[in-house]
Length: 136
Image 1: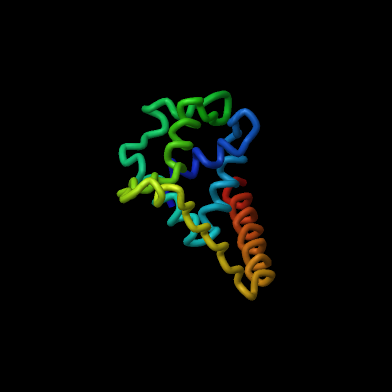
Image 2 (image 1 turned 90 degrees about the horizontal axis):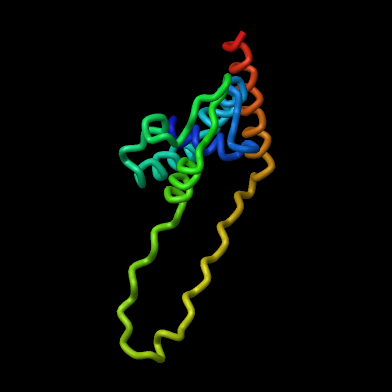
């Protein structure tokens, strides 16, 4: 899991982009224990901005017991989340340029979706309990 990308993602989910440290730690603990998907996703996002440093680049500010994402931080996060543009296809004739790209088929849902959802809820609950125990 990429810590700095996770901080940006958590802060952007709060109103005004501000979270007190207790909330930030709790949310990060939940994400850290949510599985490999989150770690892979943050790794991919971080690869788009290899020299990411949220404090020295003024993407996040420390304010009265918490952190707040700046407008520059929001812009960097949007950049990281942009899908890379597909390379321009070589056009043989104007008639071929009119053809629309094929739609992307939806992802298949796993058969045991409810079971996985319960397991995910349980992992999150356990992470919250661990976070509360370590905060005390």
